[in-house]
Length: 109
Image 1 (cartoon, helix red, strand yellow):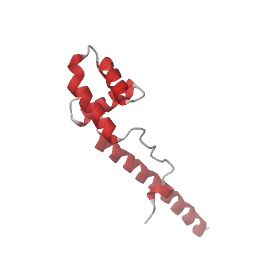
Image 2 (image 1 turned 45 degrees about the vertical axis):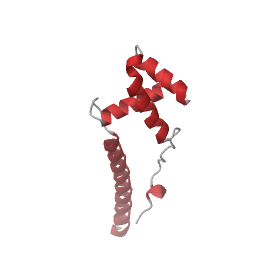
Image 3 (image 1 turned 120 degrees about the horizontal axis):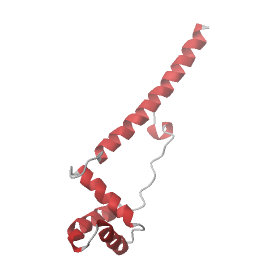
């Protein structure tokens, strides 16, 4: 069995914020959205309360939740994970295919 971590040249970047903070920010946004004129104002307020560096980060989390819940169009989190897995698998198969082609040409000579 091949170790995926050793084969994959791309490493998953660590999350800057814990999942608990993300969930709290999303819940706070959805609960207090009507108190603000714009989504941006709401996100800015929540980002300042939770110590999230940028309101766009909160908006991104909310957008992804909306996609996952089917409220907004886009690629869901599970679909993104599957795409990433398939890309890694495809790259591994291409490398193996290249090795096999090189070996067959070596032995054919």
